[in-house]
Length: 86
Image (cartoon, rainbow, N blue to C red; front, top):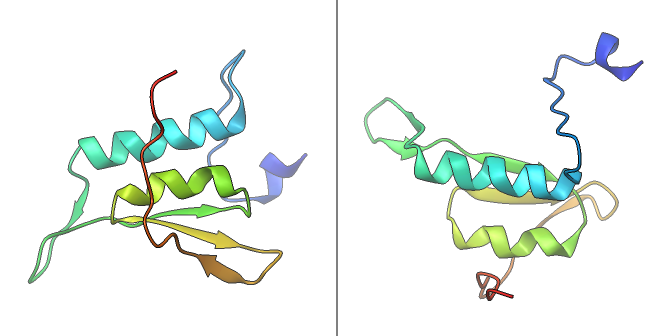
Protein backbone atom coordinates (compact mmCIF):
# COMPACT_ATOMS: atom_id res chain seq x y z
CA UNK A 1 0.00 0.00 0.00
CA UNK A 2 1.23 3.50 -0.84
CA UNK A 3 0.89 4.69 2.76
CA UNK A 4 3.83 2.49 3.75
CA UNK A 5 6.28 4.04 1.26
CA UNK A 6 5.20 7.69 1.00
CA UNK A 7 6.06 10.16 3.76
CA UNK A 8 2.70 11.92 3.44
CA UNK A 9 -0.33 12.00 5.68
CA UNK A 10 -3.37 10.22 4.30
CA UNK A 11 -6.75 11.77 4.99
CA UNK A 12 -9.90 9.75 4.47
CA UNK A 13 -13.36 11.09 5.19
CA UNK A 14 -16.27 8.79 4.49
CA UNK A 15 -18.57 10.26 1.85
CA UNK A 16 -16.14 13.03 0.84
CA UNK A 17 -14.39 13.25 -2.51
CA UNK A 18 -10.67 14.02 -2.73
CA UNK A 19 -11.18 17.39 -4.44
CA UNK A 20 -13.54 18.50 -1.64
CA UNK A 21 -10.97 17.54 1.01
CA UNK A 22 -8.19 19.37 -0.85
CA UNK A 23 -10.34 22.50 -1.20
CA UNK A 24 -11.26 22.38 2.50
CA UNK A 25 -7.60 22.08 3.51
CA UNK A 26 -6.62 24.98 1.23
CA UNK A 27 -9.37 27.17 2.68
CA UNK A 28 -8.45 26.15 6.25
CA UNK A 29 -4.82 27.13 5.66
CA UNK A 30 -5.98 30.54 4.34
CA UNK A 31 -8.18 31.22 7.34
CA UNK A 32 -5.82 29.98 10.06
CA UNK A 33 -2.84 32.26 9.50
CA UNK A 34 -0.19 29.61 8.87
CA UNK A 35 2.89 31.72 8.25
CA UNK A 36 6.63 31.34 7.92
CA UNK A 37 8.53 33.42 10.44
CA UNK A 38 11.41 35.40 9.03
CA UNK A 39 12.14 38.90 7.84
CA UNK A 40 8.73 39.05 6.23
CA UNK A 41 5.78 37.06 7.48
CA UNK A 42 4.14 35.34 4.54
CA UNK A 43 1.47 32.67 4.34
CA UNK A 44 2.86 29.16 3.94
CA UNK A 45 2.49 27.99 0.34
CA UNK A 46 -0.24 25.44 -0.36
CA UNK A 47 0.64 23.34 -3.41
CA UNK A 48 -1.99 21.30 -5.22
CA UNK A 49 -0.51 18.73 -7.59
CA UNK A 50 -3.26 18.08 -10.11
CA UNK A 51 -4.23 19.04 -13.62
CA UNK A 52 -7.89 19.36 -12.59
CA UNK A 53 -8.99 22.85 -13.63
CA UNK A 54 -11.65 22.89 -10.89
CA UNK A 55 -8.84 23.81 -8.48
CA UNK A 56 -8.14 27.07 -10.34
CA UNK A 57 -10.84 28.79 -8.27
CA UNK A 58 -8.67 28.24 -5.17
CA UNK A 59 -6.05 30.53 -6.69
CA UNK A 60 -8.11 33.47 -5.43
CA UNK A 61 -5.88 32.95 -2.38
CA UNK A 62 -2.39 34.12 -3.27
CA UNK A 63 -0.58 31.35 -1.39
CA UNK A 64 -2.39 28.54 -3.29
CA UNK A 65 -0.42 27.21 -6.27
CA UNK A 66 -1.27 24.39 -8.66
CA UNK A 67 1.12 22.16 -10.59
CA UNK A 68 0.07 19.81 -13.39
CA UNK A 69 2.31 16.73 -13.53
CA UNK A 70 0.92 15.85 -16.98
CA UNK A 71 1.72 19.27 -18.47
CA UNK A 72 4.87 19.57 -16.31
CA UNK A 73 4.08 23.16 -15.44
CA UNK A 74 2.28 25.36 -12.97
CA UNK A 75 -1.30 26.21 -13.83
CA UNK A 76 -2.07 29.86 -13.26
CA UNK A 77 -5.41 31.54 -13.70
CA UNK A 78 -5.37 35.11 -14.98
CA UNK A 79 -8.52 36.05 -13.08
CA UNK A 80 -9.47 33.24 -10.69
CA UNK A 81 -13.02 33.51 -9.37
CA UNK A 82 -14.69 32.08 -6.32
CA UNK A 83 -17.46 29.66 -7.20
CA UNK A 84 -20.93 31.14 -7.03
CA UNK A 85 -23.27 29.59 -4.46
CA UNK A 86 -25.59 26.93 -5.88
